[in-house]
Amino acid sequence: MAALALVGCSSPSSAPSPSPSTAPSTTAPTPSPAPSPTPSPTPSPTPDPVQSLTLEQRVGQLFVVGSSASSADAVTLDAVSRLAVGGVFLHGRSSAGVDATSAVVTTLTSASTSPVPVLVATDQEGGQVQVLSGPGFSTMPSALQQGQLATSDLESSAATWGGELHAAGVTLNLAPVLDVPASAEAAAGNAPIGAFDREFGYDAQAVATAGRAFADGMATASVGTVFKHFPGLGLVTQNTDTTANVTDTQTTASSPSVQAFATVIGQGAPWVMVSSAIYTQLDPADPALFSSSIVTDLLRGTLGFTGAVMTDDVSAAEAVAAWSPGDRAVNAIAAGCDVILVSADPTVAAEMVAAVLAKAQSDATFAARVDEAAAHVLAAKS
Image (cartoon, rainbow, N blue to C red):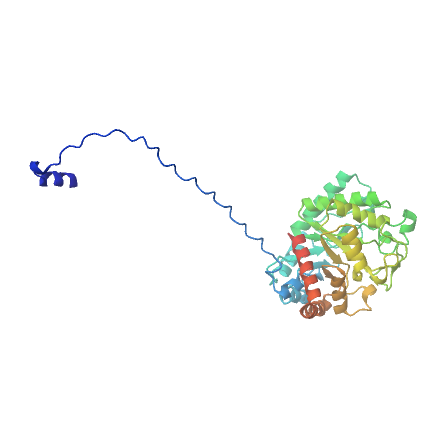
């Protein structure tokens, strides 16, 4: 319409004269500038999960506290809710079966105030050490019997047993045992292990192979495992649960039990448990779980372990009764342990947590060790 308007308003006398045609220009067109490369975006740093936790929550991650496998203990519920402990341990014996155990687990874990899921552990080695039984749980053979199975059969059986634990809500099995008694004849005098047929055998490589098969089977069912009891309880004659100053005068860094641990660590192991015995050839002064020579230098340094280190029970074991509950926890963490197992007597958990928190608040070096331990725990849980 605008074009029509212009034509209608113009008179013939005012029309412009036609312009002569011109030759096409031979000037080269100006090239367009090359586009500048778009810089790659700088990746955002991966958030540190430890830094997202308060100090109290970090300290809480370093504790696994016991409860009856048959019902949720009130003191353990308090530890989970008020102290934000990172895990619970089902102890004792329960023949109630998978469904009843799952209900106990739900009661315990639903009390948590931590942003990190609660680890649920138990002792399901087999034979005389099987906390959970009843409907839905297999009757497991002893480790000594398991060690006689073909590797593939043991792994398959462990996958079945792990599936039962998973159905009950258990996420971590404090097994397998890598302790190596000197011989079948000597095993009867080996109070904590051989006397209960808890050993896979008497050869380091065979023990490591069976332990790995057990762990791999459990992993198939999404249940973690803890290789125990570093550097080995196969040569002692007394039980650390009931006797003070249990001493091993023979074990060295090249002993069969240490070599069994070295083998599985080389293949990948997220968890190792350290014993409360004294090993005079490695550290004549302190129980293993209080010894930086054993936990930090040997286990982490020489063997290259990068996972989470758990103590054997320090709540009621006679081996550590000479130390106050608070000192037990602080000493173990300072030595390089990451998780304090408070399985038999949960009533001491609050004192232990308070001691670790107070030490971290007053000692920057120890606070850094707490952060490191929490990082190991979070990685092992992931």
